[in-house]
Image: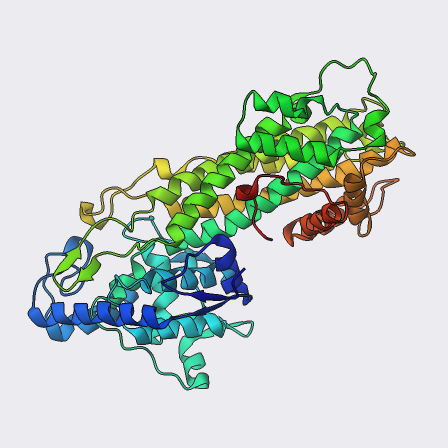
Length: 522
């Protein structure tokens, strides 16, 4: 990955965005970008001087677009818009997402179509580089006219208002400016509107969800293969010839991964001549279900990267004589794929819960509830209650927010995307999915030990060993919540997937052969 990124000029990807947020990539404003920024800002100044009416430059906002604003009041107008639109409520969003909002907004403004002055962009860059992250409430955006409320909170610190997280503490912006010797930015014409018009709240949730969802997809294939081994399932449904007859890319990728994960397994070879005809769908149909979720993830990733390099301001300033008031701020292009991803992530949890249930039935040589002495012990019965609760909660979160619209701004903004809700729902579904997968992983590790002395493949044995470094085999009941929490940590911090990739590399085995579009670096 390029360690330097030119805002407003280079192509932004999910990986680069995350690198900028985590300090592994340094973002800069190139000379070419500076020229575009200064030219656009000069265009706005020329519009003001000419007294030609342009929305948001010398007019009110929304339903107040027909209200003219005098030249002397245009600066005051920008200050007031940040105040009046800061109406967010609820918990604060994660600081990393707020930082990604800063990064994506800076990139969009640096394209040079928004009329923003250089000093404003330099202050946003200062916030990014010094980890002075604005506090942004999670609720209040309807996902059209831009993410107005969250973006207003995001940029209150520019004018010395609001709160920021600085050195691990939430504090008033005014205190931080005082400590650092900085003054509030004096916003020029149109700048307030340019700052809060855009989809950066929706987009930043999408960026983070692309990363987290990918991690869950990678884990699900490994855990599913471990459950299959524990249940003495067959690898025949993963034959490449079968999937060439229905060549969805995600399906073919999952089938290929499962073939690699199960290669040279003693457990698999031990029952090749058994009398079972077919496995349950949650084992047999992993390529179709996991693969469909992969396809949904890829769709979200591709559209997210389109949005990362888009200008979602309004109006767009092409020149002092050429401005267009359009609808690039509307969140529908992201709301729909985010809702689609909600369904896919929820289904990944559904099929995982089904495999948890299969592992408990006491079939195919496994003890009922995955413990020899049940009765006195409840075994692994109750962890599956938790997966059942979580998959049901995820189902309730699958109502597509983008299917609803409530008029705002006295009907001027009469169709909105609600995409901010789509992004937050997906984030919550992924929280639940990580727990579901952790519980299946805990159960599969328990189950596979009942196949000893036979061993699984080298890769699956490594997966089992990685878990066993932190969570031991359960001979009797204990507080399984502690085990779940420990395994969830392996899932959430990406260490499980990273370990599997290292193990595959050591075996000179490619888990994602010929499917580079389906990968990102965690």
